[in-house]
Length: 325
Ligand SMILES: *Cc1c(COP(=O)(O)O)cnc(C)c1O
Image 1 (cartoon, rainbow, N blue to C red):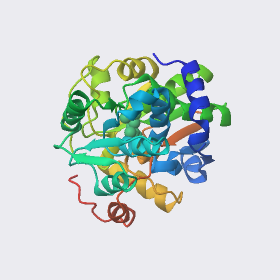
Image 2 (image 1 turned 120 degrees about the vertical axis):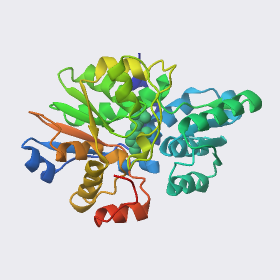
Image 3 (image 1 turned 180 degrees about the horizontal axis):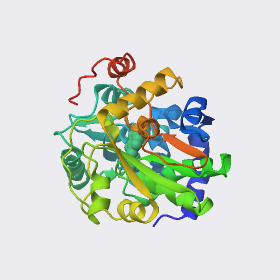
Image 4 (image 1 turned 60 degrees about the horizontal axis):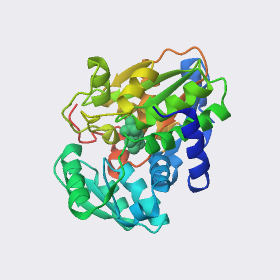
């Protein structure tokens, strides 16, 4: 398992290369919930999501020779963008394999910073097959999106920032997909603030970690379209780190409907003045839906802001965003 010491070492390694994001009190959510509620604004991180933390730590842990062979990854978008960005700052080449479900704005953002993009199949699993081929045939170096000690430790650095900024934190809401974010933040928080509760939040449609935790072993779940597109994809049937860490460290997992996620995006835009993608809005959405019971200061990890502008406008205006109910 990844330890508090690993996460502190990651903070040393990446500190000057990532933004230390703001923890901002939300007056509207505090009033609504009857407890102080804070937003950790990783939608304002460089590249638009926390994924830059894990990618930067992973790349800086590699030796120069591994980096010079070229980096490759599969992604729902944000990890690919983070790897492409971190590679660019270190003069390395990155190839990002994406499924056809990845929104166009994310594909374009990855291309625009000089990465080589390959669109393959309709799922994360399909994209991973192409990664395996590139590793095997072209000797590239794989940067995993979540099930990797350096990636988890990098994501955990935002948990250290929360513990420093708000030592009285009683509960943290963390978006949950492959579990790199949840595992890292939970390891940091449980290490620093042992009494704080950790709650993972996913969408009802295709939540692989939630299904796996319920079953007690990694499970395959069909990947379907959701407003929380960054939360799609499996956890890997051969998962080594994030599944056992989430099982040990998460106190609860909450699932949300597409309507509830849309309400979270809308609140973030209209009331908080923040552009937040579906995955980044699930903590706000869980609170608005009344699915959270907390008796003390509550921190919502707003994990990313890379939403397609047309989809965002439709949701904020309360029009149909083109997704099945
Ligand atoms: C990747 C991602 C998540 C989920 O992170 P995992 O480590 O896969 O659980 C949540 N929100 C956003 C914006 C993401 O890009």
